[in-house]
Length: 294
View 1: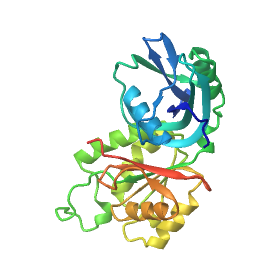
View 2: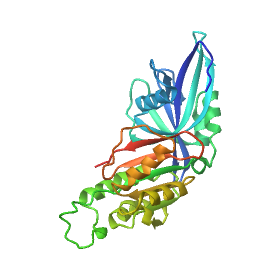
View 3: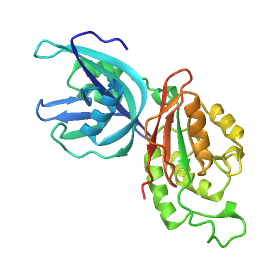
View 4: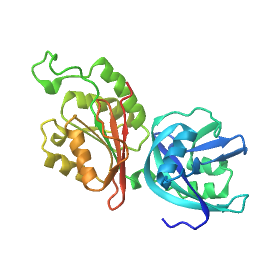
């Protein structure tokens, strides 16, 4: 993305979620210092890239750690000093965190696109938000790779068929966090290993969304790498959650990385964790790690 010379470079975010009843919503921020409602943004630190700055500033201002989905456009305007400021914006989804009032931002609101356009103080922000398509979630596929929640210890399981081992008390606590995180994502498919612990991990989400769970052998613990790769490629283009095991999730992520996905966070794969991976064909994609909630 080319930028004018002698300008102030900044990055910002349109933080979006797909609410089941209210539809697509965007987060807007109130700044008491300016008495305005705006989108979160900020200037680059020395040596920082624009997307990195956008993610950092969004987290610092709103408390939400986000996964970038797509570059959404840029805004150019002149500040009081007479210098031109150029802000690149990305659409983003929150993956962890919560808002706490701070020096920059005192309040936030989740609003529908139309309500946000009415509430925002600046024409350039209103134009950006107005340009978000009502079918944004469908237009920007995301895969959520979920490692099944805690199911106790394999060695201490008293049953004879390990595929039937259920979630533990801690596992069900982790499921609450998984369900809360994924319920406003516009997910249209839930695919899981046939193992009980994987099915149970997505069961409350299935009930919340009204989306049936699809058991798939390519997510089973004994699946081959080629089977995993085939499934991952098949679901590109979908908003999908896939629940599997500690050997299968890394295989899926390895395939994504080999085909161009940037792993933003250091690799980890704890039980109850999620990797959020954007998967549009032909675009630079990214994946971020969400640790287990319990």
